[in-house]
Image 1 (cartoon, each protein chain N blue to C red):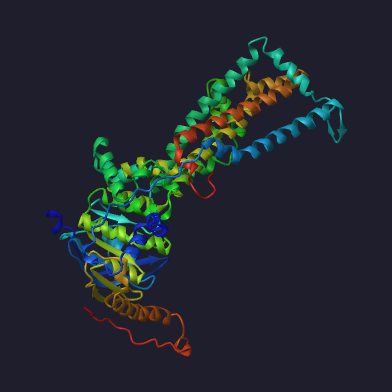
Image 2: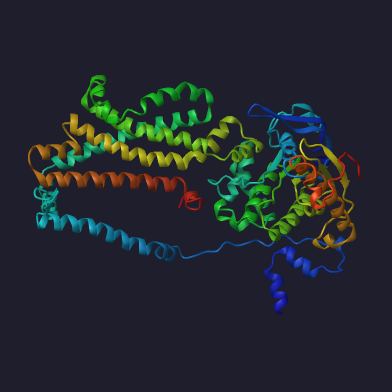
Length: 286
Length: 309
């Protein structure tokens, strides 16, 4: 398959500075990371660490201040249908039926109705939502909306799927089901995924590789490979390998969360509670 | 089927698998396609009756109270600061309905008023929503056009009557112009607000799905602003009637506003009542029409959350 060789994201020394009311905020600082074709990569870190900013750079919504972001060797200039995006908030068009939402990208490409309807129906079938094709988004549950969102992003056959905490608003049970559905679909489509989350279990369950980011300004603190075999099943979350990874990631993120809070709370404020703030630095864990 | 199996079948695929799983060969799992979920279907008539039955009853009571006060006030010629002495009774007005319909003059007045509304309002719909979309979306348009609108907007349409008579070649055109002005600004302002209230994530989503600016405008900005545009139509239609009636009373020779004012000059009190009720019914019919068109064009709005029901 030729798609196998496409969908490579390459980010080098990337920096993003925002202007917020006269103040400049360094959101992301000299980040280098990559997503290989067909790879599932998660970005994880404390809130406000710039992981969404990084994803928005790849999506083309935000411009980098310095460094480069390449998709298959070409600089990313703006949003486009070669990168499907699934957002944290529900982003379905409320005025379009479920099926027409899925058709949207194809319509923008100029695909005639006679072709896009069967394509959309096939995808909805994969997501178990064919019976809801004529419903409006406001008639669906949160989990169903996000499934439509994923299917809509996949409809234009992108090389990359970018997901910004897509299951953040869902309850724990729905979230687990959605993770399974996502892995299934990812395996069928064999495309690269960049997945932003702050849920450690979620990132391990889904990913081939996890990047841990530091507190703002966000940098890559660690790159962790997930050696668990595929297909992944919920039972794997009880295996020693999984639990070991959870502990490793928890420790890394805890350091960063404390670092982020430490800059807000005065020194001693935390150690007074017996919490060890610990040193801060970039380490490479492979 | 045992109860355990039934439970498994009912549950979602993940739950079912976690029960099945155990020491099973995890690597060799072949996933069945997801079971298709099916929507719940309910009898729409029953649903409507249950939610609206009480409302209907209360509406009738509400109208009944109004008619009751009118009847009692005029029947007993009540006088307590408010004076019902000269007010026509419901029966007088009802009788007048029969009387005026014997000649075509009354229907002609109604027809002329409705025509003025339709022309003035239609122009306002086209111009108000188009300019509103442009101002809402593009900064250049906002800077260029919005100052004009903000300077003219505080002037009530009725205040334009003398100027309109000077500006336009005929009385008819100037009345239509007043009607247009009345509905233009509510439509404009609501359309701008509608564009601004579109969730930015929808615009990002459309862009990431390959929408160009032109496609974005017709496929996201317009439908996204539509609920607010229709709010503008409703408000605009109300103001259009206010402006029309005032203009007809001041400068008209025909129309239901002129009919009502003339009735006062001719001391035909029952006709005043009839004119007022006719204006009310026409206004109600027009807003009803807009609501129906809105529902037909925006079938999704029935399900939209956040108090839009």
